[in-house]
Length: 577
Image (cartoon, rainbow, N blue to C red; front, side):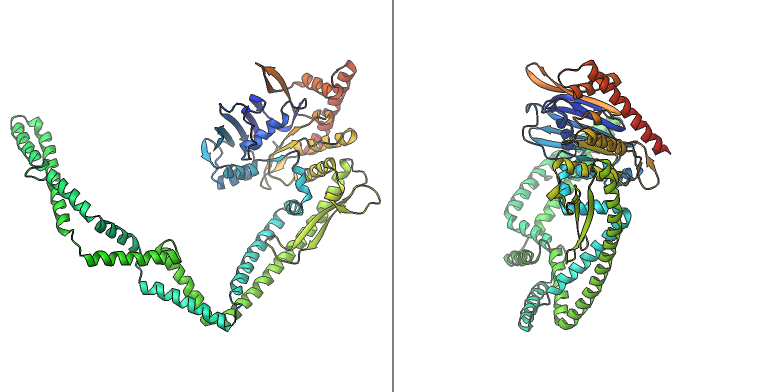
């Protein structure tokens, strides 16, 4: 779960630190106080793009730091597979923004935004104000169904994807055999030309690098000889450094005869003299051997041009050229036995399609079973959320073609009033209704989801009264449903973080935070702090009563808080049973 959030220099927030706890964490505050900005900063830390102008003071660094305590062993193992190690279950993610550039770190190690986003998918799920719009898209609806189906559907999807790739590759290869006799002759002629050109070159591994070095040496021979002659004159034993070191050796040996402690120094200068003499001999030998003819220079350049031409045509390296040659030989062999190979591919394709058809049909059958169960649960959950006369179904359509996800297109359909026909969600529901449907689905998936932290921003848009109460009870259920990590362990620290403007939802808080803005040194600044039980009641009264908080409003808020505590107590008792 997310235990700490530290934000610095973003929008209205100069600097803020929040310590979240397990269960239901509620954030309230006046409109424009910065509630959404606080949660937007979580998205920023997890790799989302930053909106222009979000940094408060461009002359200073901005920072978002998140500290997670990962309870699920399964999630820790999956993070480890991504080379993200937790220390005693703790993972710290930071994003530092400076001069328009961002640096991401996980547990102090610099990483990419893509790596952070991948890890974030295991740690939390952010449901923003417009996130529920994804529910209108059939592809997302299929993902929900497959997620609900669990390991059974996941295994069949993996098998179907594998079969689809094999079938698709065979189709692609077979398409190359759709040619007449004249086309086949032209293709065979082209293959023979390329193969002959490469084989005639008789390429040796690493030959191009050796030739490049030799050609560079030959083309710069004058400069090399001039430099080596100069070095030789500086180091020789007649007039150069060799002569001086030789004299130094003789003098040191004389001194060592009088003082044995100088023997080591005398040995050192002797070693230098020997090294310098060896160096001088090697330069002389190099200069004696450094001869080549104009013909050798010409042939080296010609050979190098040939190899570079082959690399330009058939690959960036000689290894690529060799690989290309083997592929072309296989194509030529297949072309020489065109009819036989075509028949082989057709037979292989038939078998691959049979496997794909079988796994796709099994996937459809498993999805239909899951859809029946999911439909029943969504209907019940919608009733709990005050859709009193709603009907819901998941319709299936055969796409008529294979894909890595099978042959299914699904569509969530609903009727919100008696007598109305079932229609797709985008033709029926309002934004508030769609938000509640998404909440119903999140509640259902909570039992199957490994994500420890769920974040809801303005999930209560467009609702009030009894519906708001129903939503608040759903939030409690999600927040207190134990998380089954790998099917055996149970993680009790499930966590929900929610921004709300409704007292019914705020009253259910296990941890209640208020965000307030005020003017400081002529600038508007937002601050956040956690409320105790008495302060929480006062905040509920503010939400209920608006500008004037009367004793009656306070009493009403206290009663709402008491009833909320009773509701949570009953739910937790049932969980333990």
